[in-house]
View 1 (cartoon, chains in turn brown, blue, yellow):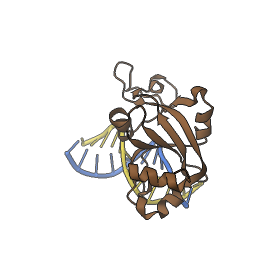
View 2: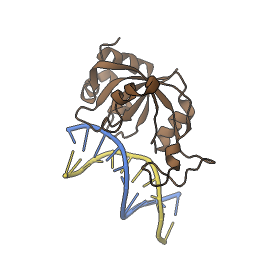
View 3: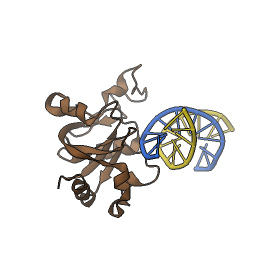
View 4: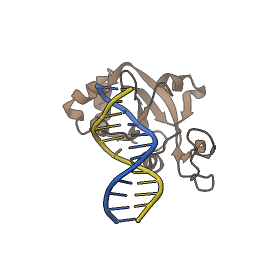
Amino acid sequence: MNYWLMKSEPDVFSIDHLRKMPRKTEHWDGIRNYQARNFMRDAMKKGDLAFFYHSNCEEPGIVGIMEIASAAYPDHTAFEPGQKYFDEKSTPENPRWMMVDVKFKKKFKKNVSLASLKEEKKLSKMRLVQRGNRLSILPVTASEWKFILKMAGEA
DNA sequence: GCCAACGTTGGC
DNA sequence: GCCAACGTTGGC
């Protein structure tokens, strides 16, 4: 069982969008970064838990929890010419990009802001809080997970 | 295989 | 909207 953090811009897709999906489940498409893809493809397992992180917004931070609801499978949005996530180098026969399904679990009553994460000595090694990290999918350690749950008042 | 140019991410 | 960080591309 692994823990993750996955970023999304709330204007595009927020935790409230996920909660309102049928079965509270949606595919996490549009990942076009090899490191992030490799995490999904090689390490993510159905049943893993992930923090839902809101980026590029008024208060960036962790807003809740979701569950990984499938293994990785080809991201079909790469096959649609003219669409935002189209990539001519990715084909159904030889897909370059992958996605997983995620299921809403919980929205925190209180967001854990990036600013508050940065203040915590215990989390100083977290990749998220390190300078200039742009990776949209990151592993989280079990101790980081527990600590952040406590910060959210959920532990 | 180097590296400059370019594009994107995302905090502020 | 700015800009630093950094991944990708492509010429050589």
